[in-house]
Image 1 (tube, helix red, strand yellow):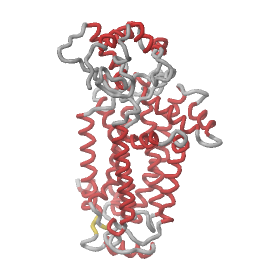
Image 2 (cartoon, rainbow, N blue to C red; image 1 turned 90 degrees about the vertical axis):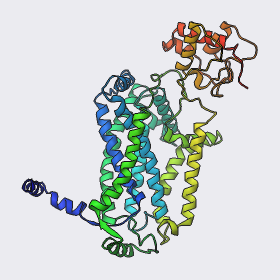
Image 3 (cartoon, one colour; image 1 turned 180 degrees about the vertical axis):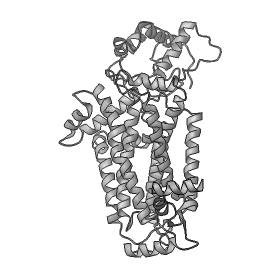
Image 4 (cartoon, helix red, strand yellow; image 1 turned 180 degrees about the horizontal axis):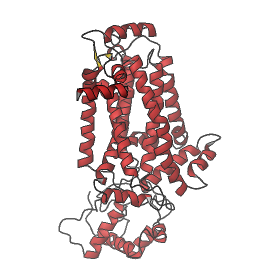
Length: 474
């Protein structure tokens, strides 16, 4: 076996590669320096699961939604592959911000690592683009709503906004060509830039190393001084180590723990629920994915005159600020203990993002999909048709906004408390054509498009009519 290993190493050139990558000396880092290895592992999971899903997924507007449903319910372990891809994507976004803030705290962008930082900033925005375009591909109400938001945002770009929208949509209106272009961006265009940058970023990390123990303790004024310190640290018996196996095992431990968490979420929580198929006619407002909640809440808190410009300007300003950071922060201090101002700034950003995320989770301004039908008061028995109407009330998303007898989300009007009790005809008219000024879609469009049958409408109306007799929860 040893002879064959030596032969393969010689013929395939593995030995120089192993000497350069695995057996090199590196400076020691803390356990949380394993966030880079974690991101690499999650990216590998996304590539593998994405390739597996592509065997079933069909990017046509008539087939996309059905193919995702088939993958989830009919393909062996398809649900697990979808779940693993979904949770790996969300956790990767979280780990990206962890990595970003950690590098800011330790001054990881300081000389001679400016190039490493700049490549990482571009990768950050490419991964966010990947995470956004990915959930559009389900082509359900959530994905199509996300695409509409993206087009509205792009339209606000000065001078070229309208042309960009026409290019991204493939026409004057959001429709089938838009799905094809999002699919091409997700599986071809963005990875075409992202994957080479990942390799280049890793090369720069190998070239310049991580922020070493001595750098984190004392001021380092120049790139030349940093190189001398790093060279001494990596060759020190207590401040350095061989990358393989010591550092690799330390970094891999964090990656393994995070990956185990992703697998647990995939197994016990499962994939993201698929909402109803994208409706190109009726406007819907489902919630975005959880890793964008903080941004959605931030926009919702802004005054209406500012929000449209902010949606466009914030990513641009954030990108410019991150690019300029290494050139504006010229202090020689590195390491968390030597950077109290940045500790305060990063802590404030993290607290704000967590607060905004929780605010979005509890938000009163948008309904959340809720598969559970409204509760029935104790002692009340519903007739079979009324019970079917209660189930349809949840299936068509009515209880995502409307409380019933005071129970549920207080986004829309309580249809069982419209003043005096309403007759069935009045309730039906209210659902089909809501009064002016009521933030509720006209379900006449659902009937006309065939998404809801007349029988289903009558069952829902029957449930609401009976529910008017429910005692209200005070």
